[in-house]
Image 1 (tube, helix red, strand yellow):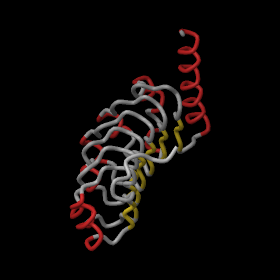
Image 2 (cartoon, helix red, strand yellow):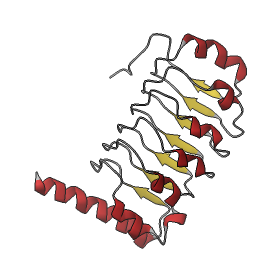
Image 3 (cartoon, one colour):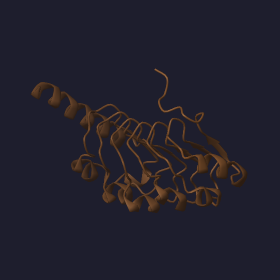
Length: 184
C-alpha cells in the first residue's frame, strides 16, 4: 500500500516538473488518485501559474476544490474535472474570466453550479451524468459565448425540458425523459 502511494506521489511530482521544465500551458494530473489538489503544487508552479491554460484532474477522487485553486490558476481556458466526487464549486470559480470549457461530467452535482453563468468567455459546459434536476435557463440564455451545454443522463425536471428549448440559442444536450444512466 505504501509503495503504491509512493508511486502515485512520484507520478504527480514528475508531471508537475514536466510542466514547469517544458514551459507547457497544460497540467495533466488525470488518474493520479488525488483526493485533493496537493498544496505543494502551488509553490512549485507559482512562477508559471499564469501560463497554465488547461488543467486536467479527471478520474481522481476529488471531493472539492479550494478557492486558492481558482485564484491561482486565473488564466485557465479549459478545466477538466470529470470522473470525481465533486458536488459544488467554490464561488471563486467566477474569477476565471478566460475559461472557455469546463467538464464536470460524472461527478455528484445535485444543483447546477450557477457561478458558471457569470463567466463571459465560457462556451462549453459538460455536466453529463450528475444528479441535476433544475437548471437556471434564463441565466444560461443570457451567457454571451455559450455554445453547448451537455446535461445528458441527469434527472432534469419536465419544466426545464419544456421551458429551455424556446429560450436558448445554444445546443442543450439532454437524454430522453426517464433515462437516468449512461449505457455501459
